[in-house]
Length: 365
Image (cartoon, rainbow, N blue to C red; front, side, top):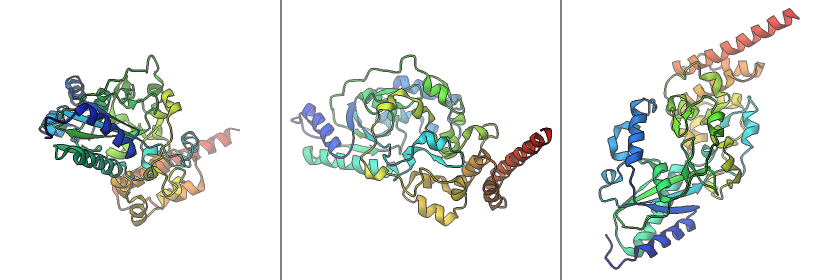
């Protein structure tokens, strides 16, 4: 740990300035006390709302007690980086085009884990150059860290009713990263809340996963179902997924504070392979090799080709009945994966029903 002559107030301001130089829009500091958040976390876990995300419970209370996760932690440096790609097709237009694939805007570019972790490491290196060796550990959604709670305590924003962090200047289209450190840095001032009586995010959720303000049942969340969930998507929820094949942004799109959110200037988050407006039938036709080649370095890559096809099959089941849609699904009807076959057969059955309804309607005329 640095010597007693270090002026931590001055160092804190330098850290914030260095963070902005490295591409973060804001950097702030907290002396973490997550005792209230821990109680809410344990209650959420006890109710099983984390679904198959066993990692949410596997580390015990280390998630809510930073000094147990990284011994010696005194303060946490939280950083925020915008990700909304300026070149992406309008989200509302894609969601209103059922033959198109909607992918959450955060996943259209490079995997954010790598970008944020590299920048945070550079920030830690800059601190070491200034004061000498110190204890720290860098995180970017990569360990049991309550990043939203820490960011709230640091004053980067407030927790919205959809459970994400909100900023008056940047809405919620940003990533968070942290540096746990043994430096006794002075904390930043907390942020006031500005959701008021607004409930647009709750009302906008396609599957009603936001069961109460600040409480999300992951088992109903489209982001969970299309990314974290490894098995069969519940039949009752499939029609509600629409054309969302990786994640869901509906609660963010509905939030009034995102009217003020700027696009990112970070090149890593620009759209790759035109995934902001791709046809569902085109994506279903990707081979395993094509999937890995075109999603390499992307957050999408981690779900694998099998779940990718599963998700697209559901979306095509929700698409208008056309010859092209049925032909695309039939080509996957005998896929090696039972998971893929199940969802393809479901989609084809939906279209068969649609054709029957159409025929009956014509007969009745």
